[in-house]
Image (cartoon, rainbow, N blue to C red):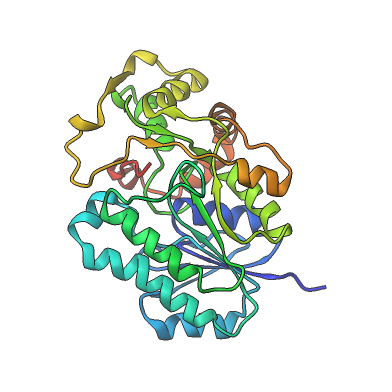
Length: 309
């Protein structure tokens, strides 16, 4: 019996690369990248520009996916604020073209959005242009029958060539003995990427559709998160100092409460979501095999990257 076909866009990014790694033995996977070539073992990848409708149609016609997980997008909040047309093109129009390309197929669409309200029923009030484009893209995704819209904030090791999560960035800095600052007035319900992948697998098996929060069962401040990483990895806690989001000089406004309740998801698939600390511990346990993959990335490239979490 042939495997079902899974299309992952943004495969060179943090989430896309981890999903490809997780699902590569369960599905026939095709990963789409654009700016950063990525060719992991046992995963077929190819370059495509999803802002061109003919490219979206070509990929769907040639691969005929059963499931499409759309991870691609412009995620740098400050860049989105400055380059609003580019952000709209990449985050909204590409979603529209992909949905149009899937029209008339039985493909299940999963769209990776960003954090919304505390619950799925909480009205979403975008505080910056990035979140505005993600909300508009959610509306585009909802045009697909039975689409699953995932609202989440996640961290993990980046197998590909995209930006680092706050956790990997912190490990890079602290392992080198460099001081870092942790924002103490922003709360998050960060989820480890492989926990997210497992929750997604269960969600697909249960045929979930609509909007769901994929999140940890608790929330912490970003400062608390970094202190947790320092403790679990054995780094010096004194290297982490508290700061305020107001002192960061960021162009795009940030919400100070990004806590998400995963209760709807847990009830739907019959599991409990992990805590932030259990995710960090799993992140720590995965450090050896993933570090081997990271050797393919130049140290110069890694040092230039910043956290996107």
